[in-house]
Image 1: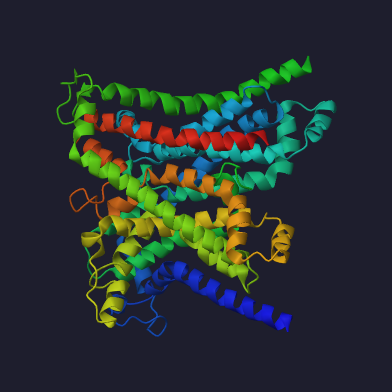
Image 2: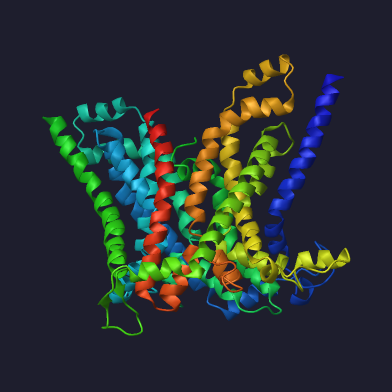
Length: 276
Length: 290
């Protein structure tokens, strides 16, 4: 009797959960579906969920009419480039703070976090002018620099919380065996911390891929990543829903897949370890 | 001996991060501060002139500032309200025994990974468009007049879009927190005959308080700087109806080329963010001590 009851509650909860999550996911699903419709079907007053002639022509159109792959490549270079560069700078710092703690370590961490809170508009004009004067406007190099800097505090923090979980004895043992600091990091720390480092990399690739303040302001045609490319579709309405959907799908699907792998790290990284 | 050595080396390894962040924070910030005291327009270079606090006076007494300050508050407050309320509900729901929880979680989480320009455009065109959007079709089907979202309720429409993007984040953090709740406590409450509401109010909510504070403060930091969603949907309009402080400063400095005025606005934005930041740092500072 009780068992029957609990199955009933489970059924009700399951139904509610699937309905709500379906509604939340719907705009994405709708975009994916619309990307396979013709433009006429895309704006039809009685839209169909599955019963239409599926077509790939929107994808062909988007690829033919715009340098989609240039923007895709820019997104890849900017997000992966800045994440790797960030790791190279952040790993030594995180090692130092996690294993050679001083009285000032905590303050230093807090200060790094505080740089993340500087609103971008506070430095908008100087960055814009400096970029103009150094010829960095609309270049991938410029954006890699900016992305590295805005994500560096998150990287140091995430790596720090992962490194803290590694017992100091492991590293001391290596030191006793006469390993230099470089060898210690390279051969002992990195292999143990590899999952943590990989998650840090993943989360930062996602954050940089989706960043939409600096990428919109500092790029034009050449270095524009997908965020800026999609923004160019904001021009007045017309018969372009299907193409907009195809372009959107190509911009979000790669990162959606990466994102689903990094759920747990997301909580940890974005809450700066406040919630684990 | 070895310790002194490794300590010195450890300090050396901190140098790149510290120097870069220091440069990234201080150099532009000092420049912004300096520009904010100048009469400096990019269209008339070479005529810069020191004018004291004039830019601040203009910026802070401009009706556009009040409107965008108010809009910023509404935007941040509205999104926080929706994402926290919805997030707590979702977290409790996903914590129940349900079939296919992993799939549900994946669907709920998805909007967070959609880039802001895509989500804004998808909502603007495919859902909220007054002629061809899905909501308009739905309204017509019900025999109602479709709402012209971005003309009639521009700020509310942006609040809805941004809430959709941030709901997953709140839900995920709160779910993570709720899963660490001591089940025995709830069972004990059951035995004592506590109803679902008193269990929620006296056990679940206090347990979540830290996670809720974290969500509020982290979201606030990001929400104060909402930009792309406004740029691609309303461009701040009609009038200043959906302009927030970030967007106001952007129009002033990069569209009207008023470096001085934009810089003064930037400094004001930094001060507002600092007030929020102080609370966030306290919260996380406490966490470091555990």
